[in-house]
Length: 155
Image (spheres, rainbow, N blue to C red):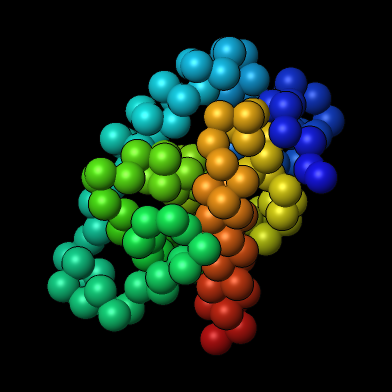
């Protein structure tokens, strides 16, 4: 079973993209109740889809493992990853997970995104506060991001 306690700033976060490492540190610095507040804030900060996706939702991939409908798209431009998410505002946990990944990985080099460990969703200390099914949804989001990044690099 993956470690469910948030990491402190150390060698485990040193190889991560800086924004993702900072988020882990932010979550580690607060108690469980405040972690949920941070997650809510990230859900509120998730950017809207650009028109090219809002007008063509068929270009987004659904992450079926999420409890609420979540769709994402990854673009890689000049080796930099750009992430786009669509999730209902009524689903703050799912949106919060997307917000973590957007804040932590959007604008990062493709290789840095591909190098993110698969268990990173468990490093935010949220497993005690949300169901295992919800955590599985965040793991699936990261998996789709990495798969789409690899596919974009192969073109």
